[in-house]
Image (cartoon, rainbow, N blue to C red):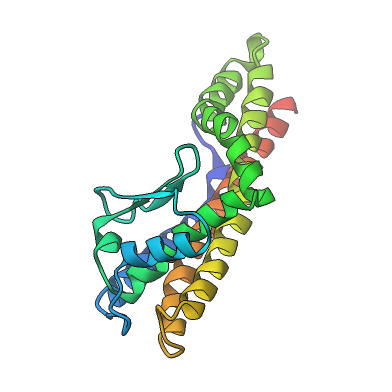
Length: 230
């Protein structure tokens, strides 16, 4: 079983889904990065205005290198935007900037799913790194009493899967907030709203795909563990 593992076929559909989702978000972002918002505001300007209007003037905004590395860091209360978002006035840039500002608002409001996700970060990071090595050691050396490492690996991976699941409502809520904030603030017009929504929906699909991959990986580990008991 170690050399021939038919359970790999379980994750193929999820991996294809993940590849499609990644391609879709890249295509949507690249497409709407060329469409300028009629307001003329940049991603940094929109994020700053949204934060200030929400009483979060203490949250800093920084430009960071890298493509689509945008994120909000709740530990230091800094919203970090990539160059493609920070100084651009495209619909894609405004959507991403408002989305990240939405995370800052979630943090300020103590949004429960975000709080749960933040609390899971240490164990999820630890679990994602050690789950598979421990599981494989337990699988290979199960005959000499190390099969318990398989169970430990599964529990560690469950923590990573839980983190992925909790991420879904956090990301989709941030996108919902972003679209509402953009429309209410006059940063985009009603005819620009569907285009911006397409970018955010494509980004959200990548998180859904990541969760699908994690769940099928967990199913695979459970099957391997069950077969080893036979």
